[in-house]
Amino acid sequence: MNFSMLEKKQLEAAKHSYAARRISQENMVQLTHLNSAPKSGDLVLARVEVIGQHKRIQLGSGRLSRLFVGDEVLVCYGNRYAPDQFEAYVPDDLGPCHLVAGGGIASSMQSKSGKVANATQITPLGLVTDVHGQVLNLADFALPAQSQVNPDVPVIAVAGTAMNAGKTETAINLVKGLTRAGLRVGAAKVTGTGAGGDVWKAVDAGAYKVLDFTDAGMPTTFLADIETIENGALTLVGHLLEEGVDAIVIEIADGLLQKETAQLLTSPRFSRLLDGLIFAAGDAMGAISGSTILQSQSQPLLGLSGALTCSPLAMQETATMGDLPVWDMATLSDPEFALDLIAPFQREVEMRRAI
Image (cartoon, rainbow, N blue to C red):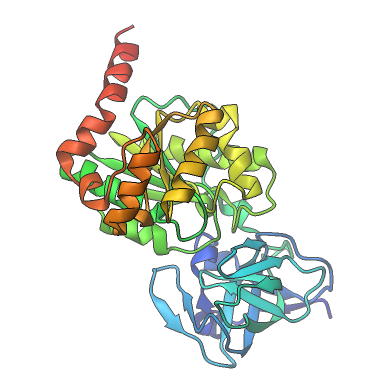
């Protein structure tokens, strides 16, 4: 038998992950056991077999739920690129695989950083389908696509050298500064791996509305084609604009050498969205090297920040070797600074509106 009914009791007992939060439980009717290759974004019910690196799963509410052997989880298949954690790919079948992100990403681990334990092992029980036997995929529950977006508010992006360079802290402190200045701030994470931690941090910083790439139908952006990622970014910005925000802060995951990040930063469609870019780095060498690359691409680089600002010496090295300002978190979160940063772009917007 290729299909079996999903009992209400089983659905209610399963832990619904952040990555799968947009998929309505009302649509979850059956399990299919056909041993065909799953696709990125496909919803799968899986059983936890061996607890590894991820000992908890992030629920759609944001709460971290402890995992136990035997737990059933609703997660999405997806690829993962994380130098500090896992390299993983959507498998070719419904055989045993791994939970490679706490936000709820099922994948087949190919390599891992020595800093982390082996990935938590899971066994898929079946792909989740609707009443017609159609496999539920995150893309089918995305926000309505928007391909033509012309922001009429300042849009500042944050990129960085690599994972854990301080991109999120840079972005949320700028959100905090703009919020303290009385603005309604929209925040978006346009690339990465499905997990809500960065989203909730932006909410905590006072953002008026926060979205990420999962809202655009992607469980992760690793190995997604550039047009899909561009369309996702435009869709997120478009929906933030519809919320009536006064400014938008965008976070771009991973580092300049990661394929999708490099493609997005050199994409004319994406670049047209941006008024400015802040570059986050973990040390002075990374800051100088990365800013040199960005300047060679004629990126609208405004300044530097990130984890290096934890060290006065690192900030001094960076300032000495480069011609860009270096901003620590206290500066970014200062309302006067935040307003001064976006003031030139606000004037440009007002001039365009007056024409």
